[in-house]
Length: 528
Image 1 (cartoon, rainbow, N blue to C red):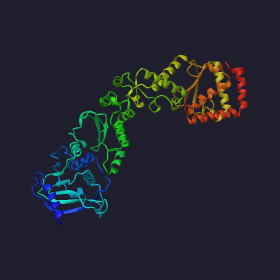
Image 2 (image 1 turned 135 degrees about the vertical axis):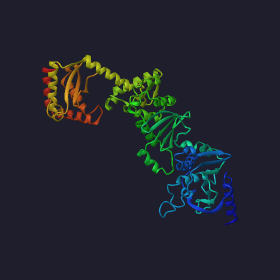
Image 3 (image 1 turned 180 degrees about the vertical axis):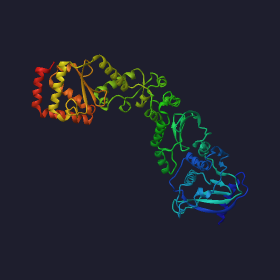
Image 4 (image 1 turned 90 degrees about the horizontal axis):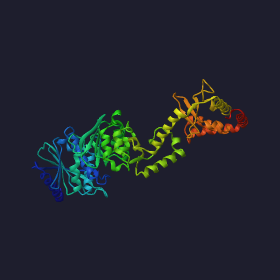
């Protein structure tokens, strides 16, 4: 051993002797690790503190509150009663048969933490357990830009505890260790306050912080929730998350995509089906995130997408009042088809209604807020449309009179002649083979020309024809009737509907002589 080496060993011995309760330290040896500073890890102070403390937590799983963390006099000290062989932590004896060069899972996080500390200028961390003490330093360059970690081993009087000690002026690292135990879910965690709701091994608590919340999974904090002071804890294991954690060698927090998965699990499984209405956890989250409503938040989106009974929750209606309206999107609508939503007339009405909301000073919110009961132009359109249909059915709808019935039967016979494959879908033409039972009614409403609606049974279809259509020429009557019949395949703009309608028109053109003959007879006999 050179004089330089002796001076270093004496330096490390003195570091150990500065730890209270240790009055002697016998140098054993120094071993060079396969871990080098060229390892591509550079953890933040938070990640370092979490992983160092996690080693203590794993050894004291049932008594996390027995772990002590102190950051005084420019020294960080983590201590706990349980002891273990430090060689396992530093992975000198590989648990992979015949392979002592591989960085394995056990202790890998600790080594990454040491490398990251040294990269930020924090040197010579110390681990103590039982009668073992080890100081970790950086060795000389072995290859260009490759400096290995070196472990300096000492025998000390037996300690009934395990310690991690490092001397540093780094304020961020000390701050991270002060927060450190809060990375783990346990009864005394200082981040959580009152329980708001619990169901299916998923709990939601108030947070003690003002503008931030936290997501816990597997007993470890995995993400933070901006602007919403709640602590969410999921005790169950879920495959989507487990697969990510197994592959997450650097112990990173959840990616935004996986955080959204976490929130979806919480919103979908963390509430009883009939327990979302008047739920104080949901109301608390909405109240505390008010300033962020216009921008939207992932936690609010998750709640909305898995909400039950919230549209009709009067307590939420009071929360929003008449100050807001939601964007109109088909994905958050109910009672309207894709084709009807993108219809030009529908879009025009939505646009006019949105402008009216703006004139009244209402603030626009993301479309999913409609599931919390916030009105949208689309919801109002659907509501008014349903009301109109109800009025039409009760006041303005009538069964066909004799003349109208004869006219419809005549037009249907033309459909059968022109497009027999299409007409075969209806029981009027093929009683034993038809899929749909067609019912046609006349309406006085000026709002519709022709419209197809589902009846009471699975295959029941009702077509409403404006009574003025019976005064039109045959091509007009035929086109409206066949158009509505084709809607069994979808709404306006949908491919299957367009294909069927094209087929009917093509057949009508090809059988022009038949169509012409029907038109002449219509004028003489059936046009009312």
